[in-house]
Amino acid sequence: MKDSIETGILQILEITVTEEMFAQFHGEVVHPVYSTASMVYHMECASRDLLLPYLETDEESAGASVSLTHSAPSPIGSKVVHEAKLVHLTPTRATTEVIARNAEGIIGKGEVVQAIMPKNTMKKRLAHQKA
Image 1: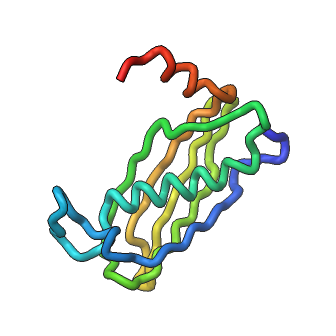
Image 2: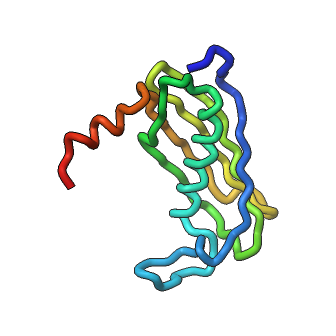
């Protein structure tokens, strides 16, 4: 990791809720609102975007865990802002806390952990597995 990384740094990701982000299972919309699965994806994106500028050229990262509470709905067309904050860093792990807000207030809170490893680690691990 580059020396310039510090806990407390922030990354913002703003999205607009679309139909593709609705809560749905097996192609059937259950609720026409921003889904928990989409929130997980966007929280992980914000956290990854925060970390990427600080990785050395011989490093890569991969998602290790995500936990969140989705506390309020967000309808189609609404803006959702995800704010990721680096709260803990070791040579092999980066942990961010993420808050998701719409115009009404907080709609979710979560934690994303990313593993930091030498570049091509994932590629090497996958080479040993059969499909």
